[in-house]
Amino acid sequence: MATPKVLATHRLFDAARKTLQDNCDVEYWEKSERPPREEVLRRVKDKEGLICLLTEKVDDELLQAAPKLRIAANVAVGYDNIDVPACTKRGVVATNTPGVLDETTADFAWTLMMAVARRLGEGDVLARSGNWKGWDLDQLVGTDVWGKTLGIVGFGRIGRAMARRAGGFQMRVIYTDAVRAPADAEKELRAEYRDMNELLAEADFISVHTPLLPETHGLFNAAKFQRMKRTAFLINTSRGPVVDEAALVAALEDGKIAGAALDVYEKEPVIHPGLRRSNVVLAPHIASASLETRTKMACMAAENVIALLQGRRPANVLNPEALKG
Ligand code: DGY
Image (cartoon, rainbow, N blue to C red; front, side, top):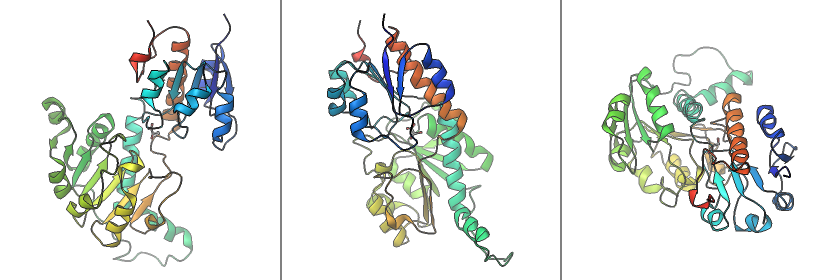
């Protein structure tokens, strides 16, 4: 039997390449910049497998350009770049990488929260500037994180990992989600359920961990910012479009909230210019970017592809209806 052809739109990490090398004939996109769309469409034509990043849209156009495609394996847990129903219609299995990035992403959401509360971005700029005149009593005074109320929006794996970290900071944890967590999870994480409006009114830090869905698109809008405490901060490591950036900028300008720390944006890589403010910490979508975790994500996508092409069920199927037999 011929070795199945696979397109990887990234050079991936050595561990993933090793996993793939004996099982598939892989064409890698080796350049450091992301491939132009036409290149992806051209290269995917004769492939049975696709390993892609969240920067590639797997939509009708791509599926049409890839008549032999059997699996699209996203190297990410979020899969809003994949039109799953379109994949299902064509019998293409879609997979993602859940579970391996929860702790790393929660670490980073925590990093952002601490950075914006304690004004680390401004401090770093000052320390590097050559203009620092030395210690001063009221220099770059921020706000405490410990002992405050953390509001978690989206209480899935990452939201819960965020909650777990709060104990060490003596924080009170409240959360909201479409589905309330079981009582034992609430007890273990010392997290109390609130409806969205209660959470907005009570939290000192709001950390967003929802997937991007039609219901969460623009979830954080002017009305939500209006309900937040004027001293509260918004942290977003989920997906950019969950926050209406223009409304966020207006809320920051009007002092409706104290600040924000963002890893994701509405129109990546474009960042709303109004977000370049001293009370906003900006990161370039790196919440899962530890070498350990990114390697695991790439290996997971590789294993999903190998499994399907060898006639086994991949571990992380998003559309089981597309599995044959
Ligand atoms: C994901 O996996 O969805 C992240 O945004 C990328 O790490």
